[in-house]
Amino acid sequence: MLTSFSTALSALDASSTAIDVVGNNLANLNTTGYKANVVSFEDLMSETLGNGTQVGVGVGTPITEAIFSQGAIQTSSGPLDAAIQGDGFFIVTTATGATEYTRAGNFQVDASGDLITPTGEKVQGWVQTNGVLNTNAPIGNLTIPVGTLTAPVATTTTSLSLNLNASASAGPPPDTFSTSVQVFDSLGVAHTVTFTFTKTATANQWQYSMSFPNGDLTAPGTPVTGNITFDSSGNLTSPAITDPPITLNATGLADGAADMNITWNFYNGTTPLLTQYSQPSATSAQTQNGSPSAGLSNVRLGDGGQILAEYSDGTQVVVGQLAMASIENPQSMLSVGDNDFSLSAKTAAPSVGLPGTGGRGTVVGGSVESSTVDIATEFTNLIVFQRAYEASAKVITTADQISQATIALKQ
Picture 1 (cartoon, rainbow, N blue to C red):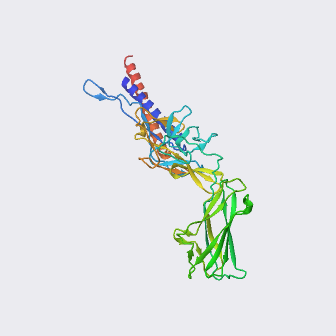
Picture 2: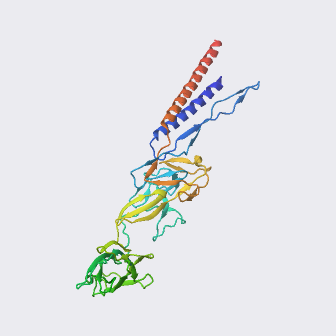
Picture 3: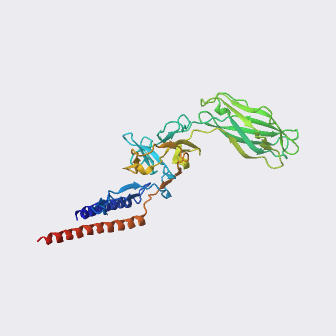
């Protein structure tokens, strides 16, 4: 008789624990990266009576474990948000220096420029050092560049894609055509290099002049001059691709920048960039390899876990890389709150590396992983556990009534 009391009490305790788990799951229905927990019940050792009959003595304390199934990937508005598609965890460190793991990728930047979770843990990965991103180095805090400028790049080469009118006249006065290219010095200051083409009396020949603005120099410069020759089909024949390069030297810049040596490329590989057809002289394209200093305009997290810095001149630079950890038995990890997990004594050693390698999942930028809680499943479980609790309570009530009846037999 007394066994029925303890058996039913163990069931009440187990059902109560299971209801707590369901309640916690439902509370985290909208928690980013949350993994739903399930309970597993195990019976206790049976009691063997004198005639060999075994009678159970109840249910043990339920075992609770998180199920690391894939949550839905949802596009978010956070530029630094990231979601894991597949296995693996983001790595974070707490204020005390402890290493923890999370699937929640709703990241932000703190006052120091470090990438952090909403609760302040610092996200781990690799950052660019002296222009190099070394993912073979130890991981550390991901520091986002804030308010930085790119160094200017001095122009060293330029090219023009243009047509010179085959119907032009040598005059007098001779027909001319001028165009210009904006170039940049070592300080990022812009200068205008002018190209002038003058038709000569020789058939299919033009004279060119490439000049730097004298107002930008401490002393007048010397233009580079020469002749351009085309064949009867309007194709460039001179300068030939094998001829020495034509270079404009600009020395003594008034702004104090370094001297400039700008090479004029007449060919794209082996294809001439200049033609002479019976069409108006015009430039179709121009290039130069310099750039001014640019300010940081935006930082976002891209696919693959790359942290991309976007500058005002349109360039993008990879300034960081998220690290990921692969753990063989994540169910053994301990939930420590704030969407984080820590390792237990049963957890396999994490393998740290790049997303998409070594069995680690991929990272989707601008997205977050939703909670894996299914409201329909949890409501069903809630009803089942409630009925189990009520049934166990009924056992206790019945056992109490039988006990009272037994006591009444003695009276």
